[in-house]
Length: 201
Figure (cartoon, one colour):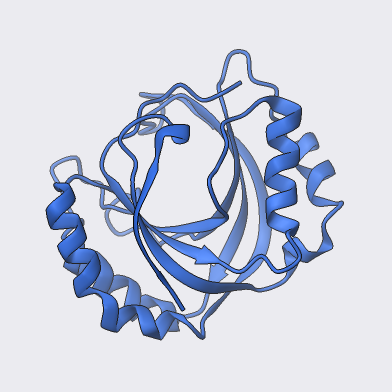
């Protein structure tokens, strides 16, 4: 089922290289089987739910251009597969959602760049004690490739299905290369998200 949750704010994505379409094939396969919302492109979320205006978000994005160049040569290593459920109000959950992802391991070299980006977007330690990556204060960043989002209480997405689709695409376990960075307006449902600006390496 298509996720009905309405998101808010702006988000910064690391756009990833998908040379053999293995990531896209898994995403499209699960979308077709479970009628889940279309995810516009394979990506790793770097900063999430920035509560600023479009103008200030664009200014922050453009001021980050010197930092983006350092991401070009970096990779992320797949190290797991997850399918889980979040329920609003349970264990700090903010929404009702089933999601699946390929978990990734970031090299230590990512840390300084990520901290600089978070600082420029000024997203750490807000009044809800959440920072802009969706992490609790002090929690490590957990990069991942989102594969599908489903609606609890009617959705059919589960780990068995995710494993079945992923098993058809060996390329999904290759190191993930960053090909660019993009800023997205995420005010609305997943299928209403709009790309505002991008930098392609």
